[in-house]
Length: 138
Image (tube, rainbow, N blue to C red; front, side):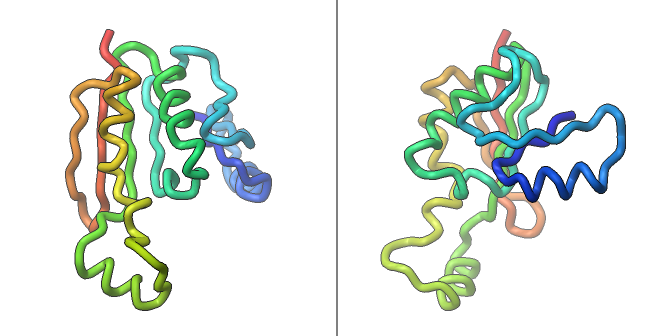
């Protein structure tokens, strides 16, 4: 299991608290994953896509595709922007336009298809979490 984060502080924090020998933590951005081609079975990207600079999100999706083995699965998750969530958080951090466009992971559906992902599905889980899954076919 590899946890990847661009923050040196986050990587150091996890390394200090997790001594399992099959877990490793790597400092790197999502758009430049330091993993071999077709080397992982599952990529989980939870509550992260909106933190990746807009201009690098397509590259991050391409990297997720590159490192997945054929038959591998992608899971993206972020807050499902319901009207209640928009109201609640929009009042505390008002910005011009819809500040929740960036967290709505459904916006990545065309990008997932364009790199080759299939069976792209979106569901709303517990706690108003949007969950998108996709497969890299054999």
